[in-house]
Amino acid sequence: MRNVFRNRRHSLFALASIAMGATGLLVFMGFNRGTMDQYRSDTVRSRWGHGQLYVRGYRDSAYTRPWEKWIEDSEAVMQRVRQLPEVVDVFPRVGIPAVLVAGDRTVAGQGEGVDGVREARFFDQLNYIEGGDFKDHPSGIVMGQGIAEALGVRVGDDVQVVTGSGNMPIRRVTVSVTGVFRTGIQEFDSRAFRIPLAVAQGLLRTDRVEALAIALSGSTAWPAFAKAARTALPELEAVPFDELDKVYYRHAVDWLDAQFAFIKSIILFMVFLGILNAVSMTVVERTAEIGMLRANGESRIEIAITHVVEAAALGLLGGCLGLLSGWALALGPLRHGIAMPPAPGLTRGLRIVIALGFHDALEVLTLCIVTSIAGCLLPVWRTTRIPIAQALRHA
Image (cartoon, rainbow, N blue to C red):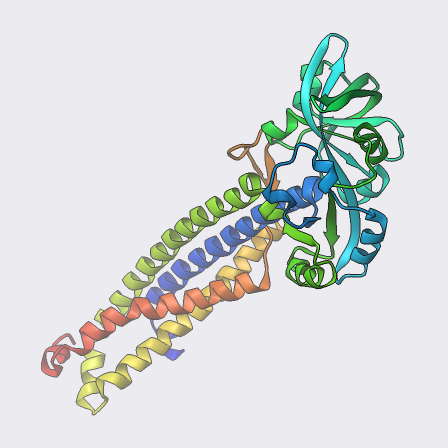
């Protein structure tokens, strides 16, 4: 530590390099975490829940009359699911392909029958641009922005939902638009709609449900829930939300992780170069001192350890300064987040809040110390290899 403060100019340069790198890393990791949190929250609380339960093997096959393979006695099953660990709520759902008719316009859609009252309490990030959930409206419908524009309807307008195929009689029901949403996923917004569960079951003439969406106490609770569900409900298959939404969530997260890892490596490399430069100048200026220490009997290993500990101290001090700067930025100028344009595959932008965590701060501090030590190894090794007489002449 005396050496750190004795060589003030070089120490300040090294500390500045480390602190700026630590600040950039911490804020960048917070941005990364905030992006992932936003993606996860949008996916969980707008569409899938933390995962869904299906009859085992149902998702692996196609059926002409799929409702015959759905979950029977759903109320009893839901009661058993609620007793599993970490479960906050359970939402029965029915998938219903249908044609929507408004005036002289007709659009094919893929809808869901849901419990409006229960779902409105949890699925609060569907991003309604007009109106809202139908809740307890017995004949309401909410739909994506794309399908609403194709039909030319707004909140309060009536729409006919028509179902039927070659082996199923044509049935129709008139519903009223209560909300128009925009998730940002164009394919979903141009086809999706939701109607009350009872209306969907009436159109399909079934009392079964296709799936049970699960709300847990947190995203990390899914493994424990899935394990308990396999034991308590072996006839059902638990599928996590990232498996249900590979395209929007899993692929996007994998792509972002790879991108962030590359940028993180660039920041670390720049910090490494700054430390290497600062330490190299310091070590070169102290060549005569190193020669004196060796002439007095100090071994190369003892001298190297001294410099390594000094570099670790620089990394620790610079990392702490960087962490303080990063927290100040996150809680000050960036406290309202960063507005981002639409990501690939989306049609709406996001506001990313910088989410800093203790583990991120610990990782940044560790990286600063490790990088500082790595940056000093080469110049120290080269200088300690100089013959004593030649090192003393540097004085």
